[in-house]
Length: 425
Image 1: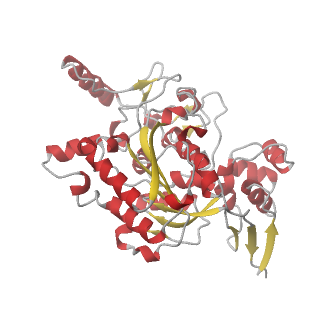
Image 2: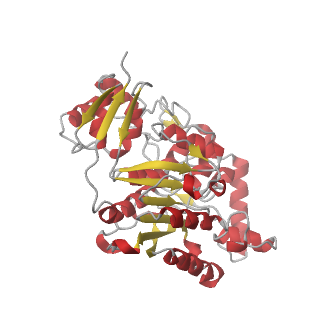
Image 3: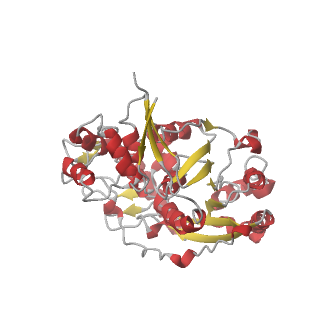
């Protein structure tokens, strides 16, 4: 086994690019990343900064007998991980994931496809994992299940005469699995994400229990509701709960970095481009976009029957004075919230097409709407992909929070080393 030490003052993307160039040409790497060869040359000449998100795409270019171990500036765990949206943000500030938990097998498939370099497996049901088996870590990340606290989830359970919130045995108590791990491992910090309605559920009593539970474990918490429309063309309000261990004396401030204005990005920024500039992604092929004819595949256009049904449904509710109906969007629009039910009819976000029925977003467009780069692979069916992106976080929002937390997380940490290790014959 031969170990090559790569200096820590290089960005991770530069380091992985250097490793990949041992085995591939600039043209091959450019094709793999969906960029031009000139871009690769500029990165290698240090004339431009490669984006951090290409790290995992570059990992796939390394031989199977070669791995990259990046110690990172801090260690974190990814609970209720979904497809890794929060993780991507904290890796961009040089964190290293040491534990993952996600129970859904299809989400596990997407996660594993996009985070191939892990030395740890994807664990399933967190309720079955003793706290002492969770590795020591500096930051706990958790987008814990929102169904018991969401407006839609509460309404459904009320209609069925079922309990919700912490009285819901199937999911409401999962918050306490976060607490037991925090109590056992005492991380420096945590970031929890949930639906906006968490603060008002049960007249605020649910959030009060959460707040008191976390503070009782010795943490100062700072909750804030942030709309994804600051970063992507989608209104998506979520509550983010940042916590730092009280003895650290961290000075976390939500206002230390201003949010971009809402609406500065519109739908045209994420839609497939019909002018010949749509990137060819080898992992997408022609699934979503017909490059030869420069158009989205026909299967995403609504049938006349479905389109008529949605119009009739909207008209019926307008007559009753309700606001229910489809959401027709244009290139300069900011959309409604993408939901996990989008696969059913796409009604909340329908893209206008001149002379045609409107269409759904493709899964690739949904990925972009959630802030995932085009290097993010989608190895599941459209139905599963719609569910996964509808349940995910806006990566750009998480990156904003990660950067705000970074100074307090790594205040007394030394610079990490990057080690490239491969077996020699």
